[in-house]
Length: 201
Image (tube, rainbow, N blue to C red; front, side):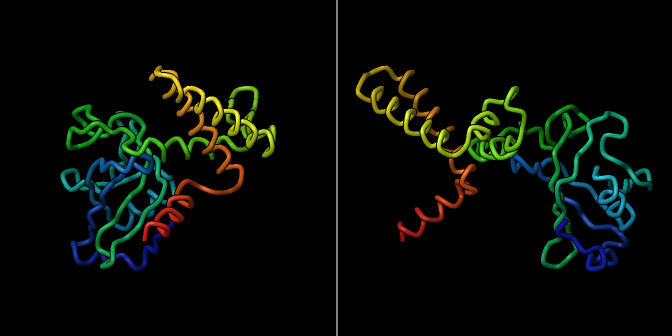
């Protein structure tokens, strides 16, 4: 975790610091809570986000009644060390009203390619009998590269016709297998974007 508890300035807020909770996968801001030193320590220990409830004057683990826990991914402090950014994965709706966020927003992947890429990377070493992506990794780099070539040819063929559905499906197949190839080589789409940014200057 990117956090040093000793550096957090709890004194400024009479023992409490604001904790902004953000979905680690979608980037959506989910809620705002408050933490004291004890709740921060418990969050790090249990890897479930725990706050200090100002109304109940006690520790409060999100989801202790509903079961909609916030699984901790990381915690970061701001430049003044008096506010926390909590990256978590929600299990169910976050707000007590039943909405995804406390601002009644839908929590979905704005950057689906990023989500897809993370899913692909998570399949490395997985069971090839239950995951096509894991099967591709198990077959090795040469087979993955060959598959990218096949999908590229199929997309080119469909580009010469006027069937929008077939063309877009082949384009999606190519994009998916391209991301698998990047992952097999140990790279991410971000590495390619950096090259494009350099060329754009």
